[in-house]
Picture (tube, rainbow, N blue to C red):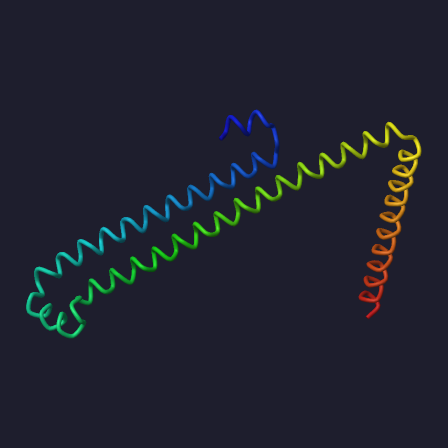
Amino acid sequence: MQNWVSNAGSDVLSHTLARHRNILHELSQEFARIRVNAKVNREHAELLQHFSRGDERNSVMDDGGFGLQQQALLREQGAISRSTSQMDSMIGHAHETFSALRYQRSTFGDISGKINTIGSRLPSVNGVLTAIRRRRSRDTIIIGSVASLCTILILLYWITK
């Protein structure tokens, strides 16, 4: 994946790769922590099993066949399973979003290229495109001026109050 990103030379892809590396590192640490906790709980349950033979008979009758430790482990296993499925779902959504954005980027690039091609072939269309660009830049300047004027007026009101 690193070779592909370095060949593409895109900052967005390299940032995405770095983010995925961070996520992988965090998930690996979380997995190692959970694995150690599960191992400790399993060993603890095995140790308790040897000392509580008499209590186990009572808990089997009270709990419908499972001891308290086994129920706790089953609850923890269910929580881990739900967390894992939620993480898989989130990663799937992120991948779908990335694919959609990549498709939109290529579509807009194609549209821009076609409009430039048409503009270069037809002078009247090129004139219309130039007028659109001028109007858009003029509108941007007007909106920026209005926003800065409003900001200045708000600051003056705030200072005088």
